[in-house]
Length: 265
Ligand SMILES: O=CC(=O)O
Image (cartoon, rainbow, N blue to C red; front, side, top):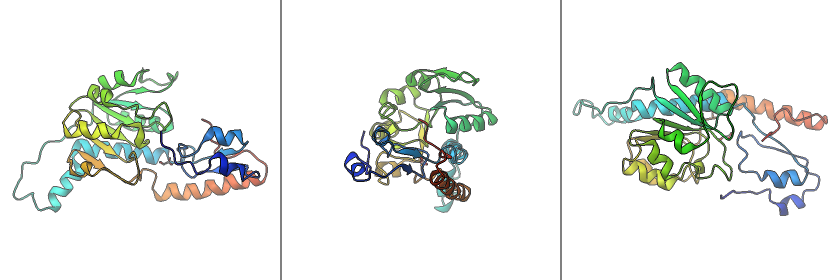
C-alpha cells in the first residue's frame, strides 16, 4: 500500500523532543502509527468532528447518482432540454438495500440518514456491533451480493486496501452503485473503471481516489459517475470546529493533560 510518510524513522530520529503529532484529518492513513508509537509520540486527530458532514456527502452523492442530479444539470446547461425531452429515468432511493462498509461513526451517521429515507441497511466491519439493528456480514463479498448500493466508510489499512475488488463489484451487480467517502485505495480503481465502462456495475459517487488529486480521465466520460475533489469534510462549520479542536489539543498538551481527540485505533 503506497503511503506518503514524511514522518519516517529517519525524520523521527532527528526529532527526539517530538511528543505529539496533531493531524487535522479524521483518517490517519498518512501516518505510520507503529513508528510514532514506537517513538513514544502521541497522536491526536479530528476524531468524530467531520462525521456528520461526511455522512451528508455520502447521501448527497448517492441521491445524485440515483436521480442523475449532476447529469440533469449538464443536460439543462447544454440546452438539450428543448431538443431531447426524454431524459433517462433515475432510480428510487427509498427501499434500497444499502451495504455500509465500515460501521464506525461515519458509517453509523450514514445508516441513520438512510434509515430516514426508508432504506434497508446491512453492514460489514471487523466485528459485529452488539447494539445495532442492521444485518451484519463478516464478508464484504456476501454483503455486496445482497445489496443494491455499497457505501465505503472505512479507513485505509493494509487489510482494507483494494478490499473492494473486481469480485466484490461483480457481486454488487449491473444495477449496483458504489459510493466512496472513505479512502480511494479501498477500491481497486482500475477494476472499478473497467466495471463501470463495461456496465458491470451501475454507477459510482466518488469523493476519494487512489492517487489524489489525479483522477483517471476515463471517469470524466461516464454519465453514471459523480465526482467530488475529496471535499466531504469541507463545510464552514467543520473548519471552525477544527480550528477550535487544534487549539484545545495544544492547550491540553502544554498543560500536560490528555489529548481532547486522541487517535484510539
Ligand atoms: O478525508 C478527510 C479526513 O480524513 O479528515
